[in-house]
Length: 439
Image (tube, rainbow, N blue to C red; front, side, top):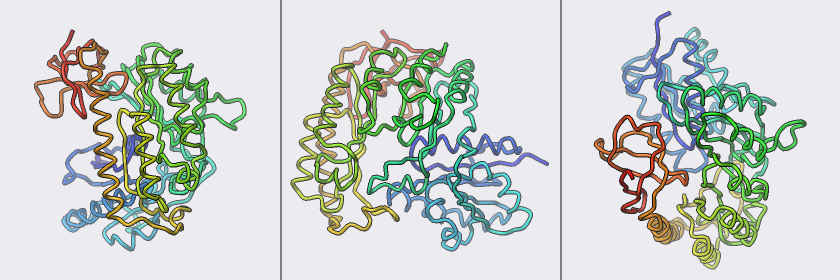
């Protein structure tokens, strides 16, 4: 059988990006090669995100644009995976007539079998069953040549059931991988030259909980920290209610654990947090931030905030702005609330007018830009360790990399520095990046 080409389009977060890597790993064993030219693809896989309405709309727009390719090449197979596939199932086949295949978040391992069936029968298929164990969870990250960073999934799913969140419905309940598998995967990556790994899960803080004989998350971090050759460890995403003292102290005790944490707060109003079912108060959150900064003063803290949650009054929004002023996040991913099917919040009354949501979002983002710029400017004149990743996206004559606190730094350098950690002095700070020179 001749080699075939697959084009994979990914929407959403790092978890989805890593799932796309797994999809290719599985297809590679079936003689597929990855192509960046969609016009040359024999198979197109769209890996989707449904965590917000806007992301879902982007998926359907993208699928609509594929109709022309299908008309041009009727043998082309088009498949949709990820959260939208899990959420919508067979309905996507009715909505997108040129689509061949829908596979859910627990069915990545079945993709070769499903493709074979489409080719042999010509039928349009959907498979969105959920299982007590997920075979694709253990598909390892395999290093590519000169790879510097890699993702490693340590768990999938979530048991929190926040009222606005669709993750438990499309990803399932929490499942932790065996720590031995995780550590062996990271050892292989490190031996191949990978310098930085990011541990992934919908709620990494819950890793190992309730699994007899298994490590909990701080213990896993300590084990990863001992792996030779590895220089940096990151993880995402954390739930504030599960941020233990033991995990907090890891930022001081583990030399490879980067001083950055993404800690979604979602709202600065206790009444909104209660309806969101987040399990903590604003005061709890601030205490945990203060403890993080006491233990690791140079830590970078980023967050997620939703504006316009059902019933969010003007005073609730003002409390969110006050929280931002208190914490002064390094950056914030902010979004307008949108109903997600099956979630409790979608059934709540007192929906907020879209114009009000847009106004609040604009105000919040303008506010955060001031804090982000101020935090970045605090770094001017400082010498920072930068892991060089490659050439700058905006200027191919310059190099780019990241600090341990996850700040992007652009500087004049050389290609042989890629993969090395070098000292760079910050000369100028901007909203989204830093400019420096090699010390």
